[in-house]
Length: 168
Image (cartoon, rainbow, N blue to C red; front, top):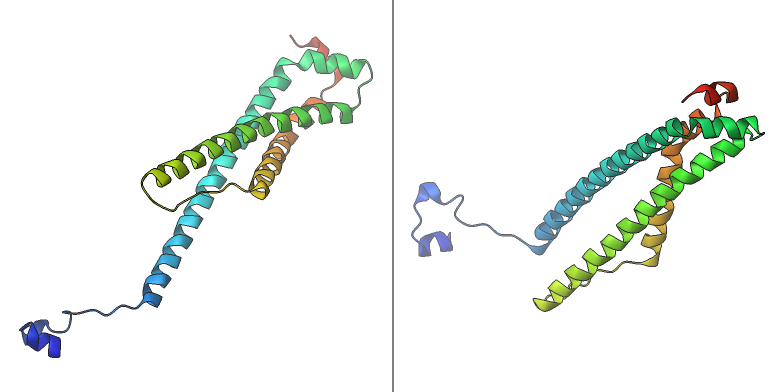
């Protein structure tokens, strides 16, 4: 009421004239926005992994289709289903791992650039890439390749040698 009297605010507008906020309210709002951003980035990462995995699966299916005669020849010469499975799972994991390594390198370059830009503007923001995050990204990348390579590898391993050799 003292502030309303000092600023000569009419009676009908006094209710919304002033607001009081404390640091706990501001901190709660920041925490909520951080959670929303984390969730949003997690969803984007999940969609990216799904799209990348489907891309790897398609590449491996094309590889199986193009190498059908080779697979038939290997099976005719005594290769077991397990041997073919291991070959194609290793290829899909290696393909995914290479993509993961390129992604880690690009992430490091971006992090380094952001750190330099922050230092140039006088901010104390220094992004760090830890060994744990690099190892986790590498392992996860290989696992995505392995997961999405199971179907093409199984398809290749299930080919009958006679049918595979007949195809052109």
